[in-house]
Length: 165
Length: 362
Image (cartoon, rainbow over all chains, first blue to last red; front, side, top):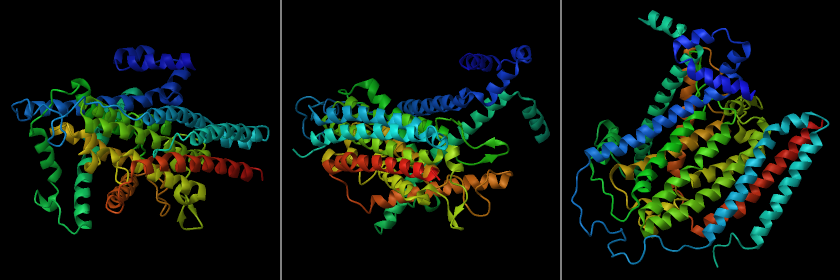
């Protein structure tokens, strides 16, 4: 279907011009089908439109504020970083606890595991209905979750989540 | 007049009408979303005042209803201050990114059944929930970039704290909804709503929140995680005034400052809409046949009204909880996310899977 969906995209782009629409009108059935529902491509038009709208609105707000806003005079004191009235000492970005890096790494690992679970969740019911695959799908996921849980226990035992130290 | 418009509409090709109606729906949705953001602020201020036995903003317009307009105009006319020590590009980009993911997530929320032959969802994606989680995770960038770009100590600490908080609870959130999809067998959000139609025990709605103990637990985890994801109180550590003087947004002024709050409220609305869709039956009500797709205009409008009503109740809950709970300490927050929610959510997935397996054996 890859080939057909590519053509669909092409046709979709072209058909905004009316005269090409006429020339492409006697296309095989598959094209009409895929324009209507076979592919998800037309659904993403809405996403694209919303994105354009969002960027235009947020960008517009900032530009409007630049144009309408009061022009203040700058001064040296005004340009210092805000630290409740004290003069800032040292750099703005200070050193931070290594714990944060650890959390970020664990996040990447666990997030990927979560993404793996979604396809399983989608096919689970239909594979349960089939006698040949119902034990396979449960067993494979139990083993997957088991390995994940062992990794999780390892992180807990290594005190990766201990913030009081 | 109407005749000619109708003729023109019927004469359009499929693709043309798709583009036209999608654009129309996108603009209307966006406008409604922004209005809701404005009035959620009023709702929050009035409710807060009510809870604290104050009066709240009631001077601008009848019952203070024009307050958001006054606030917006004020934000636009304020002095736009960009301190010299900031990283300019990221400093401007951060408030934009605060709003964009919330608007993009509108695309997959089914906010009604249909209205005049049009499905009341912008993009009926078959990856529904995956799209949502993908876009939601972009929201982290706004706070991280704001903290980094400000090049100042308090915003930096706020940004780092907040990024760790957001990514921790994202895992719990992602895991908590998997039992729902084990029950439904489809990632599309319309299918999730279809799976919640009808009643149980004759009168109770068949919503996932009370359908089984597993889905109820899933809802509890999702609810708490959504408070953490939107930086609302008990979890508002990134903007803890007492420790960070405001957190990631202290170097911001004028509309850029306001945009972070618009983003926060937009995310609140979005997360409420997700909870309504996943656990509370979306636009359906189990009584009076309101759980079937509308065939006429009145039912179509009614469905949208039901959806907005449910979202409104969740927004009230968000505001209410703000005054009922004190803020967590940081180690408690991380502990709750990593050491309580993740094992519980994993166990929940396992129990649901085994229960479905056992039930299907008969």
